[in-house]
Length: 271
Image (cartoon, rainbow, N blue to C red; front, side, top):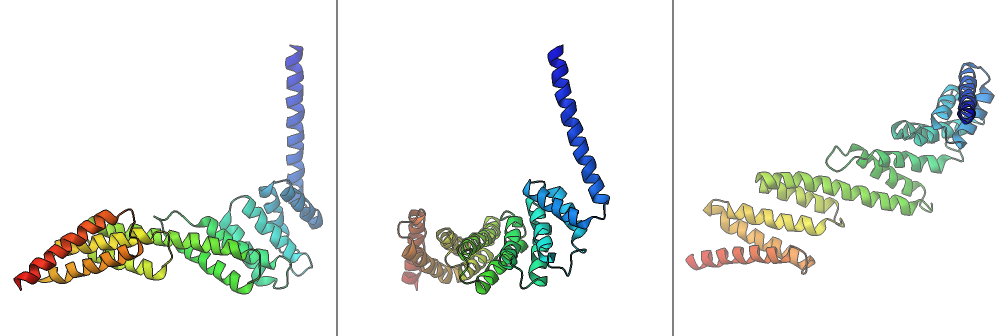
């Protein structure tokens, strides 16, 4: 019984402290002591209380506009939203800092974080890739603006990752054309991906599906178009095998090449 009373007393004291803290925070929100709001916003941010910090910086942002602390308030406002994983609002405030305070000590970080917040919002490849394109653009602009920055390497890595995602998106779309039997559309989509992203890590797979689409297109064509399309398949085989002679699909590629060549030889003999 005595032990239970001690535990209850500890819990009651803890709850009282928490409620007292909540009460103080509520009073602060209603206060017009903007300096204290700023100071407590910084303290909350440093303690990882990002929601509380963000609310306070939202309240004082306009108050400090035009002062020497204006960019610092905007910086903490953006960082507080980032801490809450609200990347849309964080990116908005980082961009606002960059656009408004061109001489700020936070400018380089704000420019980078604007793009990085797009990066954090980039969805999986199956979905719309608007934020992926925005990420690439922002990172490219950062590298142009800060060519000697230590963040350039990270920008390059992000651009490569986002580019691969766009190729994957294109591959998924092309694969859908392929699965539906729309081989001409699949070939066109895949070629566009290779033109735009020639160094993608999906290059071997893209070249192989182009080859296979070309073969199936020829195999299913009317006789008057088969010779031209089987010849195109042979050409695609050389494109694939020239780059990936030991590729994982080299045996199947050879089978399609042999079949295409056999058709062309028979057709030439009949001519």
